[in-house]
Amino acid sequence: MKKDTATQVFESLASGIRLDVYRLLVKAGPQGMVAGQIASSLAIVPNKLSFHLKAMTHAELLSVEQEGRFQRYRANIPLMLELITFLTEECCSGHPEKCISLYSNPSCSSTEPLSPTWIKCED
Image 1 (cartoon, rainbow, N blue to C red):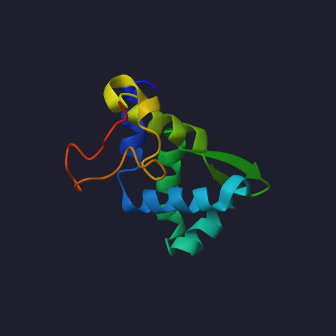
Image 2 (image 1 turned 90 degrees about the horizontal axis):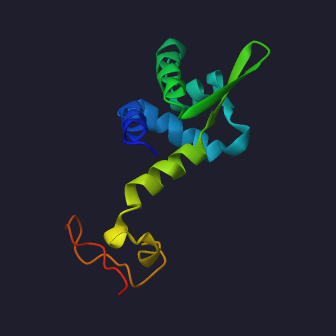
């Protein structure tokens, strides 16, 4: 992933509403949701939601498919996984294989919350 693409994705998510939309669509999975379902699920007025959906679609965070008079939105999970890879590819001095998931590997554990040395890498 290029730095410009990562920046565009972050800028697109720099809103509480957009974060809520993205997380809702991730939860919905591959079937996605139509705009009306998103609006009612998040209690957002449709015209306000359409502004956010357009920005997220432009950043390629969402895909949209026309279904009759409705539009179905889906989260672009591969893009988010690519962003995570971009953010972590320099883990352990450029050897991310040494920093296996922080959730499951005891060799990469949290020592102090919010500390710059919170990742312990395997030797």
